[in-house]
Length: 178
Image (cartoon, rainbow, N blue to C red; front, side, top):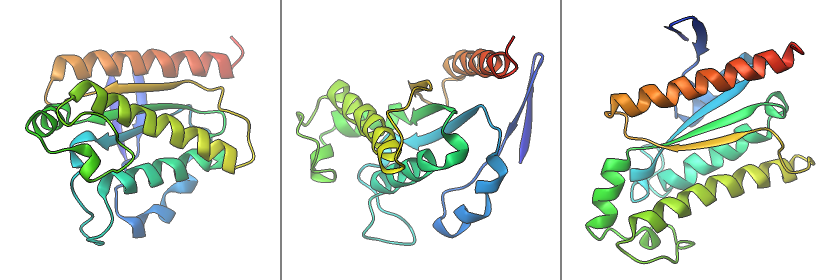
């Protein structure tokens, strides 16, 4: 658990890690949260898990995202998705490592970075919709923000975190009926 202080706002961040065996340990830490921040790597579409050499990392990330979106703790929670490592993604796609070779649902052109990003955005939007449907809920009404990021671009990350801070602040005001 890490605490971040930026100007006036104090936010608790809990890094839940990516290892499957660790996931059940952290879910109860989230009761009462206003936003879930989910970080997914765009550039790992052609890679496989360390602990399961046949499981694609993007598919695993989508599965985890969907699992999290199903939890009752998050039914009234906004989601903020960082699709990170855009620099590496752009390099791979631009260099001809075709998304469709690893994720057959992708039907776009081989070198099209924009269509590739749109594909990933739609995967996560669809996963959230499916999670709510499988949980017996109507379509989500809480905000879902998707940001394409490169963590080494500190100015862009700062703007995004300022945006997140404003979102969390507004959600807190709404929860307190102010």
